[in-house]
Image 1 (cartoon, rainbow, N blue to C red):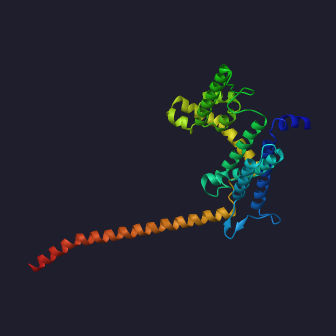
Image 2 (cartoon, one colour):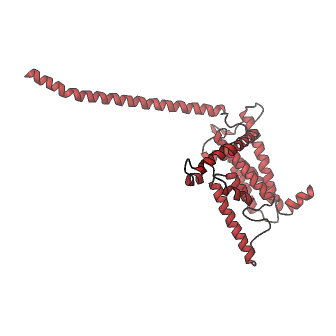
Image 3 (cartoon, rainbow, N blue to C red):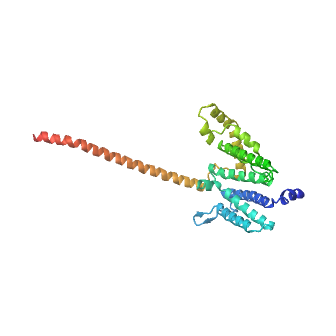
Length: 305
């Protein structure tokens, strides 16, 4: 095992990437354990980091660690592999903290324990999958062991052509709403062919542009979504909740905020309705006065006559 590690990781120059990969996974797991214990309000565990009434999310610490690790890796000379490894580990720790709150950055709202918070886990899984493939030596958008050679025009042409074709298939696959197939297909081009040929997902840009609602392709896409995609999504959600906890159980602090916001919204609607009722009453009174004005004058003129 040690010889295999030295042969596949150390000798190929992937030791910093391995340090990043291991630090990313360990930090993500420890972070999720920490937040789940905080959510469970365990007495002997830590609490959220706050400064007064301000809750400091761990994405802040992640940004700092990413900055330290990234700048350190650029400043360290090439021969110092150990320092490169330390920089990669620090960068991996920061990346895990940032991607664990990717949904917060995406929505600019504290959606960590809501349905939208699952976007963070999707980002983490994508990062782990892509980094793992890179660690195995699989090249994106190319063939293993083939590189453009300025002295061999034929080989260069084959490489560039395959690169363009794979990139085009990846774009088509992503437009069809198949994110995982498109990303993993960058490393395994055969998946891009399958993703580009098969029908798009119903809500994807490709479906909106090219499938007429009620058409044969659209109905086929809806049928495939129900038959194949939804069971996979349920399985993915089960794995996500097993690792990171349920996201449909709203914590008490978010529930209080939601209830307060709902009460404020209802008060606002009630004020608007009262104002509208008052305006309607005033308009009715003014209309009745205008109508009664000519009638009163005509009655007075008849009486005077």
